[in-house]
Length: 383
Image (tube, rainbow, N blue to C red; front, side, top):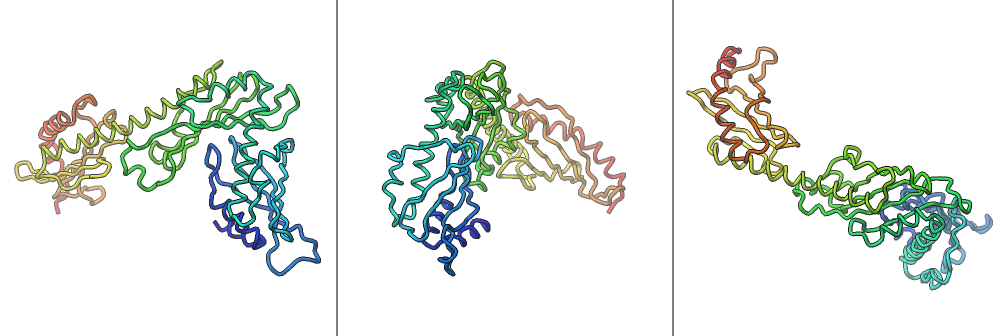
């Protein structure tokens, strides 16, 4: 935010509103990435410099298909009502859009602060067409792109190959694919602090035109990452040798859906487990996690011996069993002076049991373990 503010301060007052709207609009393209502006300069002759900021040209960096486009935007602060010029830098130098197709440039409205946003949208539309034309000389790449069109597992696609000599492929070609993802079944506690967009994007990098080596990478928006876990920890399927995107993209989509289903099922099973314990030990419940259902504490009594049972449900519940921690209400540990505890991670358990059966089996284990726990607890230092 601070860098954006410093950029805006350098711009001529009549140019600044256009750039403010560009930065405010922010996210563009398949990845909904942020635009960045730098290198603000003035085209005015030195003798006509004024005391007010006179920056009227700058570089804009636009995320596109896993790469970053660098274009230069040139206004004339001496005649700010004129439309801007554009220079397409780097490997975009051969991009030469038809001016007649840039309606918002040919009919530039200096009174509309959204005018530059609209022109950039026109240019990006034409740039996508330009990239599609570039891959027409490569049958495999053309097949990959065409096969993705209209697929249910593919919301939007960008392809980027830059400039190359005719008939050659000197550097990787990126396919950036937005995958449809629905987080509505996810428990609200996992997404309530991330109100952003549900976004999952697959980047497939073709290292040659034959597709003999393809490197996939998954990118998630903060909201999706918080719900499903860090994208580096999600092991998406490997791209098969000789495979194609038409078959691979649905595999990644199915993988994401299974992650969502797994999270929803785990939440429902934890809630069922906690509900079964509350039903069976209702009067003994000290506290429980009513949001994520990962913790439960009970105050229990056996032959006038009172103790607290803490139950922690792991993230992989019910595949992984809950941890039982027995805590004495009377005695301190000889080692650290804190209440004596005994942690139990092994007892009769099956992930196939219902929550009610788990609670019943746990009750039997607790009754069987109490005498041993009491004996060791009493041998500790008394308060």
